[in-house]
Every structure is written in C-alpha cells, then in structure tokens.
Image 1: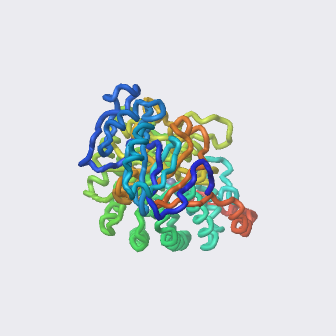
Image 2 (image 1 turned 90 degrees about the vertical axis):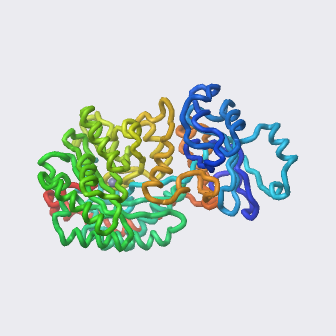
Image 3 (image 1 turned 180 degrees about the vertical axis):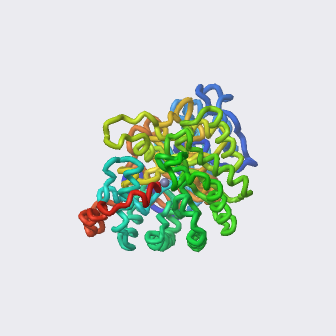
Length: 532
Ligand SMILES: [Zn+2]
C-alpha cells in the first residue's frame, strides 16, 4: 500500500465502514424512495439551507446531513458532505451522514451482532470520489514524445512528428506503451478509458488487435473503449469507409472522424477535415455508416480558434438530418470561444437538440492552441470551449486527458485528478461553486460511455469503486499532488503504484532515434495535414 495515513482493513471477510469521508454530494446516489433532503443544504452560508441545488438525497438522514453541513469541516461551499460509507462483499451497502461524538456513543451501545463485526476506518475528513472515467485519450501514441519530438509544439508540428513516429510501431512496443498507460491510469484511480486509435491501413492493423487483447486483459480493472481515428476526407473513399466501419463493428468500437479540426479548420485551406462543399455530404456518409452498422460516434471537432470553424453545428445538423439515435460525443470544440454571442447560441442549441455530449481537453489544448511555431510569442487564447455556457444549457460536458507524453502533448500521466484540478484553474470552474463539475470526470463520461447506472457514482447497492484522498477540501485537494491517494476497487484496496518510466526504456531504446532521420527528409507535407 502506498500510504499509511489510513490503514486498509486487515480482512475483507467482514464488512467495513469508512467513517468521515468527504464526498461531492452530486456524486452520491441514494434510493429516491427514501429521499429526505432535496434542493437544500449546500449554500455559500452554511446556515442557509435554502441555497444550492443538489439533486441527490440521502436516506433517512436529513437532520444529520443538515447538521453536518453546518459544521466547519463539513458541507463546504463546493458541495462536499461528510459521510460514512459501509462496504460488504465489494458492494456499498450504506452511505449515511457521519455521526457526532454523542451519536457515536449511542450507536456503539445499540450495535447488533452484525454491526459489531464491522471494521471501522477513519478517513479523517479526506475527500472521497468515485473512480474516474477518462472519455478521450490516445493511449496508442503515449510515451513517444522523446523518440519523435514535436519541435514546434504546435498542432501542425504534432501531425508531422506523429507521422514520423509511425515507423517505430510494432505489436510488442505498442502493447508495452499502451499497457504502461493503463497501469498508470489504474493506479491513479481510473476505471474506464476511451481511447482513439490510429486506424489507417498500416497502424489500424496493429492498433485494433492490440487494443482487443488489452481490453480483455484489463476487463474488470479498466473498461476500455476504442474509437477509430480518421480525417473527414477519408470518407470520400466508399470502399475504405465501409471496411473501417466493419472493422470498428467487429471490435465493438465507436466510429470517429476529425471535422474542421486543423489550424485552418472552417476555411478553404483545410481540405482534410473541413472539405469545402463536400462537408455535408461526407458527414451524411459518416452518419449513414453509423446507422447501418449500429455504431456510436465520437468526433474530434473545431480544435482551433477560428470563428469560421463550426464543425459542432454541422455535426448537430447532420445528426438531426439523418435522424441518428446513437450516442454522439464531440471532443475539443475550442472554436466555440471565437463565436459571436448569436452564433454561439445557435451552435449550442443545435448541439442540445442533437443530444451531443461535449468533451473538453484543457491540458492538451492549453499546450497546442495559439502556439507561436517559432516560440517567440506568448499565447493569448485558453484553448478551451466555453465550458460554463455549455453546462448552463444542460448539455452534458466532460473533462478528459487526451494525449499524454506524445507529439500532441509532451506531458501528462492519465491522472484525472490532475485533469480536474487544472481544468478548474483554466476555466475558473471553482466560483461561485464547483457545483456539478465533479460529474465531468466521473458520472457524465460514464453515462456517455454507456457504463451503466452505478459507474462514476457512490451508490448504495453499487460496487465499492472509489478513491480516498488526504486533502479534506478542494483547497487542500488541489494544492498537493495527492499521490498518496488510496484506490478501492470492488471493496478491495489495490496496491497499484504508477510504473517507473525506466520500464519502457528497453522498448524505446530498441527503436533508435536515428531511424527517424531519413523519414524527415521524405516527409510529404501534403500527404497529411492533420489528425489530432
Ligand atoms: Zn484527441
């Protein structure tokens, strides 16, 4: 176990109760029949229980919750509430408001035989969250940033160096890198990952089989979903498109496309993801394939700051035009920040009508967007969609990792706490209150991924999958790395730690950097303008 601040139960044969865990109220799910508090209790002023709008309720606990909210270390302005969580046989059997010292004494006296056998652990008011869901990643590219460096740090530079890296990809090294990433995410407390997969003729033959093997191997630890990654112009080729849809279907994957997603997205200078007059026809092809093969869709869209880039609107229109009923996820959507208020409203209303879930990748887009290719200018734009405006219109919105340690982002560790923390800073999500934002890294992506009713929530009757942190409030949680967090999966306290980087040395050293040099000379810029 990585930390001693809370000792795991010595035996899992008895039930155990984690006392004094501070959880986001919006991530609690208790039987509605027994709802006893609703629409109250979380306010800026602890004494004013009429403020705030938590949509969940706790069973038979209203007086305790109300009291808990009024104590200095409970029920802060960001919707954290102090509870005890009881776990038996891997299931959360009860969540109740933590007791006061007097109540504790009374409860001890009244405990029946079964309760006497319960082990009690003190979380010391540390934050507890359900395990994370990372809905947009590229684990197939991960850990290649030193081997094929993106020298400019721009999106165009990423495309170029990413293609150069392709020569190194083998089944063995791809498996090693992908699994390294899964181990890392698992140790950080992530239980579901959706990864986009390079799906061209050469890499697709590698990525999908490796993905399938790893999905099977990691079943029960990380639910793994795969999305094909292609630029929109790829769908001009009828034969290749159908083959791709067939491949995706055979691997139980999700169909993807990059739309209006280069630095020149939305303009005539982008024939690859904007495609001029053919845009609507090509989008119709994507939707028709998805309908025919019964596939969900996941787009890279509007990854730029261009006002002309309205891929989200075109995708929404295509979904409605084609009467598409599957799940649609749109990642990036950075150009929303460049729209006029009128056009922003039109785009968001269309996305809402089309039931689109929007995913923001703040870390990667902070790194890539608005970068001066020669490194002389400071970026002015923040590289994020208008997260608050999206959420205000009740459009589901998620935060995710995107790339880690590759050509698109030179850093990152698939740590969703880091993604959450930095997103809060970048987008000012913490004022007036964090409100529903904890859902953006847990229950909202879990819902979009179709993972069932309990994933991403702390739910009575659901599996005991959660992460315990030492930080007691967001101000503590976000100020230190929380690397001593404890991860509980199906009631078991996992001892996983992040793998050492040197684990990858043999695989990366084997593919020497010098191999890239001839490719740089032969690189055909026109051949590949962008992926993501
Ligand atoms: Zn991406």
